[in-house]
Length: 471
Image 1 (spheres, rainbow, N blue to C red):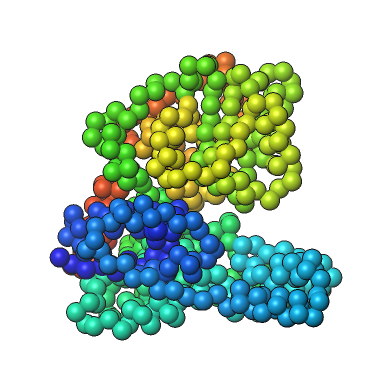
Image 2 (tube, helix red, strand yellow):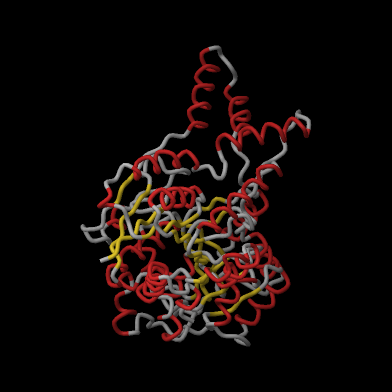
């Protein structure tokens, strides 16, 4: 059996969305002649901190070795030392918190700092980001991870290295080890790197350096995998020299988490999006954060309510998971809708309980504006439950997935269009129907892992990666 090293910074028991893809590939690769070994970090070191779910690790057989390499966080240590020093001399804690936020790396966008000139701000971000967040805030894992694996005896050297990102430090670890051992490298994009609307540096110098870094990784890679067709096309345009080595393998769902769907094709037993009480319930599971804000949706629903066209007896928005929206207006809208029974917010629940609740939902809500190349990983679990989807953000990869496979409806993130959609649904001019089981089965990780193995086989035998792609 051939050996593959899977480099994945996020991996169970860390319960990050990015951990699910490498976990499930590892689970099924042995069925296709590949024995995986995983190189990851440990739950204590993982940055930013994530919850731990030990049940996820039990999805792997005991013969799969998982090496967990810890790493430090230099910026966190510096801030801690600085805070202890300020406390020892009686510095004001409120000022400390402001200064700490200004000392944080800016790789998620950055903000202007009051009282400093533009030049000073730019220089500070260049220094801090260059030291602590280049190419990403997980950069401190690079050296210990590479040093750890380089000590392996020759008998443990893999036939191929597969590295999945982000964080992009994982790709650098994979590139370094593949070059050291002289074995092929496959890089897996779960998100765009330099074309990512959610991540950029304040400094144009660092943004250019990251582009150069990505070009170097793509030139070295024997195969590039994108998790959407749209991202695949973008990679081929950005890296034409690697176009023939680039394929698309989507995210998916683990069929073992949905045994009834996998065995009988009849997990979905609720034919209508409306439960017996007649309320159209749209459920969102997972964290609400950043640009994935429901503000436009909430405003449209509140406007309909104020006009007397919508009540809590007709519609219910249910959010299950962390609510991490840093937008006072969005928070105000959510509270107003809660008061009139149109919205509920509930804390996160364990993974398996979450899947069960998805399967019993009236319809499943997806919020994905301004992300034309990306598809949220949670949507594939939505698909597995065979509940109809309502997407707010009707453009790009996610909208194409929903409409192409008839998984539900895709609506632009426009207040007027959202109003029209809800009125059509409530007045039954438009209906939400469960998707076709044959469309759902295409996104099983058992099927997708077979595609990944074909890419691996093509690379080690010298065949064309592009011809291994299964459409």
